[in-house]
Amino acid sequence: MVLAFVDLDAGSLTPSATETLTLARELASTRGEPLRAMTFDDSGRHDDAPTAAELTTYGVVRWFRVAHPLLDAYSPELWGAASAQLVRTLAPSAVVASAGDRTTEVMAQTAARLDLPLAANCTTITATASGDEWRLTRVRNGGMLLEDAELVASTALFTVAAGAIEPAPASVVGDLTTETFSPVLDDTLPHARVIERTTRGDGVTLASARVVVSGGRGVGGADGFAPLEELAELVGGAVGCSRVATNNGWRPHRDQVGQTGTKVNPDLYIACGISGATQHWVGCMGAKHILAINTDPDAPLVSRATYAVIGDVGEVVPAVVAEIRRRTPSPLPLPAPGVGADGHDGDRPDL
Ligand SMILES: Cc1cc2nc3c(=O)[nH]c(=O)nc-3n(C[C@H](O)[C@H](O)[C@H](O)COP(=O)(O)OP(=O)(O)OC[C@H]3O[C@@H](n4cnc5c(N)ncnc54)[C@H](O)[C@@H]3O)c2cc1C
Image 1 (cartoon, rainbow, N blue to C red):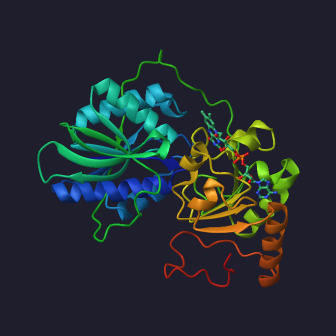
Image 2: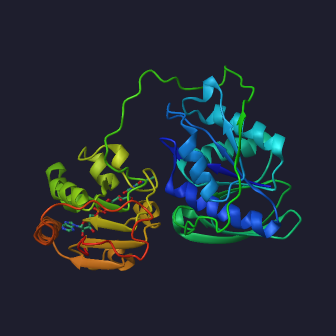
Image 3: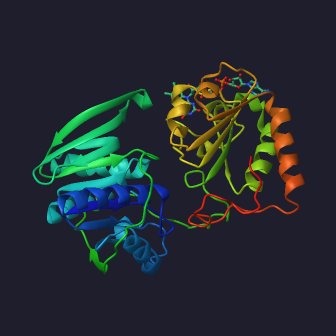
């Protein structure tokens, strides 16, 4: 069996979870094994039906909901202890998770508790039809090195780099069995307690946005983000930033993209006045397309971008906003993922 550790956002699969499930299903298929899934849910909603439907779509046949009162808030130690107990019980040939902050922490905890090897940030994983041998390529040194490696283990643990896998639902789906796994937990382990829950706004999150409009030093200050906010709203995207913007107090840290911020994998990343230092690049390199707006044609991000506009961000972004407004009398939000599978976005103007 291959076990996918599926991260949820308010009870729904995250984009990285769909990538994880796609790869885990391929590995399971190569080995002729079933695909199972493990989830934790700290959303406080506990509505299983939508999650079950999504897991079925991705080929999962058995779903373990890990549940315990101490797990209702995220804790790496407690979630790791619970995950280790389930992995020990199931003895899967592999456990596959996304390389997000939480999933990586939980997988590291699991590996350490069970003394199993963990290959982090994989871009490809190849299973042998049987046996304990796996081949993989993984990103190291913050994206500067791709390492080819072999892993031999009775249970191999992997995390998958964001954007490395194109998510695809299963061509054949079966019936899903749902099971609650209740671990035995030590309440002396460090854990968080939920004091209050507040609802998030309707806006898309940085990690799941299909378009991210990000600003750096070149934006010039907190006020300089206003046109970026406007552009993001017009295209149904989210605003991100570089560390210079957070260090200067122009944006909160939750908006930061990069090694010490959020790793994003949108369809389009619009980098406004960002040079593209390695620590920023590792956060946005999962984007399918990058548009760099920069006065410096030699900026690293300009060289790596799919498209570049050499110019002042203070002029270019307002011009783009004005052109979108001219073409669309009323703002059109991006369609939900899955809509417009032909690659066309209806009347939404091309950027
Ligand atoms: C341990 C560590 C972790 C880090 N983690 C992160 C991280 O998570 N995320 C992150 O972003 N950084 C991180 N950094 C910082 C990183 O090294 C860079 O310093 C930072 O990304 C630079 O931000 P910037 O591109 O906005 O600024 P700069 O490097 O100063 O670049 C500004 C860019 O704006 C352009 N520009 C200037 N004026 C204009 C204008 N009017 N119009 C258009 N373009 C203009 C310039 O040509 C330049 O390319 C980290 C550093 C360390 C040491």
